[in-house]
Image 1 (cartoon, rainbow, N blue to C red):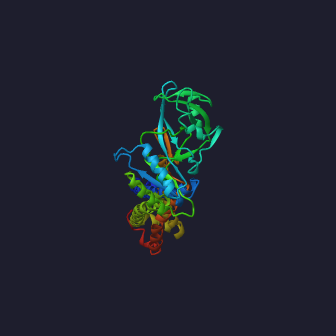
Image 2: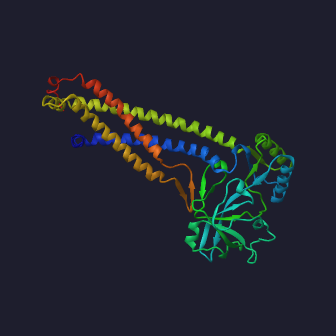
Image 3: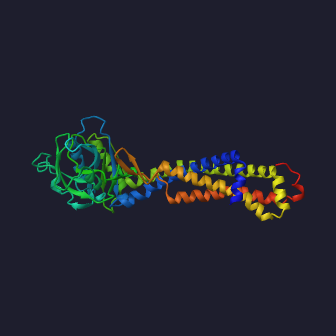
Length: 400
């Protein structure tokens, strides 16, 4: 190894340029692999996370900005009609909100507002205290006043940050009063914008509150149908009923949307992956040509080594070792750089932390290592083929 490093040190500039090429090509490969990992993460993790089959859940996107006086009361009437005319069992929604409280110095703390009976989508688990009850959503009994505050669940980091305890009360900037009734289990997750987005929100530094009735409906609603019912046909019926109420709405089965997203994203990412593999092959072939040219420029050195007793295998190990050191060094530097850029499995956007699937996993690191080894193969093959034809008496007179 010392001899390999000494030999590499004699040609610093050329080796640095080769190292940069290896790093750039491997990093591009890592980048495409991470993007593909995100697609698989969405496609596999969403169904595994839900409490029900994605083939039996319909997601409805409501155009709340279409005008026409769409109110929550009208939308609730529409929902009741859907339950009467279809086999829909449950309808739920949620949205991301914030919680601002000057008295506790809580500013724009993230909060998740959930509909009643949303556990059929994903359970909200409590470690201390209690979860939400049906009466917590009854505005005649829980109206946000000091006498009837809204219940609140908080994450463990949220509790530690503001030194909150179960039973504590406070008022937010909208003059709504809250009482802490429970603490969420550590590492509790929820969905970010919608289920089909595939991004999971960690609730450790957030709060969860009941979804109070607002003048306008939410952007996304979820309809559950029983196993014996065609969710696709039900989605069409939901759109037809929405048309009767002049509600602009598109309904689609969650599994169908995931399939569409998976196919589209994979198609795009496979193209980039193929391009990255082409780049790796081009760099590998180019590196082989450079190493061969360098071998001929080192004829005198190689001839002297062979004349003083260096075997064919030892010379080849020296030359191949130089290539391996360069490529594996490039792989190590790429792993370090990609780790810095992609960090861990959780991405932070302000105080929001998301599991997006965009992280450098061990599988990708090892796959990059295999790609790095394969990059050496053209050089190894070329050296063995060309070097066997050389003899010491033809090399001594060469110029290095």
